[in-house]
Image (cartoon, rainbow, N blue to C red):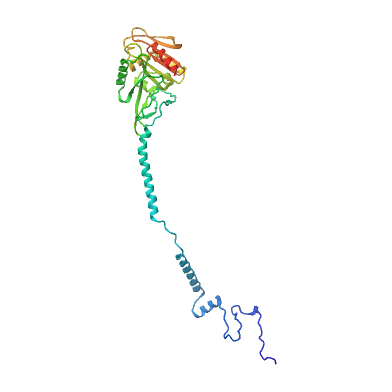
Length: 341
């Protein structure tokens, strides 16, 4: 028996509307199931809720922003550092700084008292007139420097030049000479000057040869002043008799300039000895002053004779050291002691 049900005419998929896809009715399941799409929902909202595409876009953006805000508020928070840790760090820094200050306060006096004995004095050659002066190394009074004289001495006497007038200073030196020195011994006359150290303390500095010439205020030839080095020695040598024999030791930069300077300075040497040591070479000259060449202990020596209180002798012990004294026997002893150093 042939069926009278008409055969539906199928429409090709390419001719169906895009937004009207519907499922075919299933026998016994009632109304057909409609598949919703975003486009269909938007069209429905425009028709029924008086919405527009712009208002729906704004609503969607607000919804997304709200979701982002909720996600941010619900994210786990990082734990904040505890205040106790900061307090411990600050207290530790305070204790460290305080402890360091106390340690430095107690250790600094001990460090300042530490001195290195028997270190040689290093000086550079200087040039110019005596009025230029020479810089000297300042040492603290708390650490008394070990005096290293140009000729080894058995005793010493110190004079601080800025505590006395030149007249008083030279009077004390003359008194020291009159007191005498044990026969064969040498006493070093050490001249120093008070100054301020880098730490702000009062210290002492040994003066230069130029400084001594300025104190004596005796004319000095420019050629000799230019050749003078900083270190020098003034001293007393013990000989038979009541008074000690005075002497000077100067260092020069070269033999030629040093000898030329000494030859030019010969006539003023008696005044220089009279001023510093209180000798009486020029008080009452007994005759014309004569300069002679002679040899003492194998050294070429110049002597100044015709003085009422004796003679003055000087000789170059080496190319840079000249010894000046008022006794030939003292010159022989001083040259020999300088040569064995």
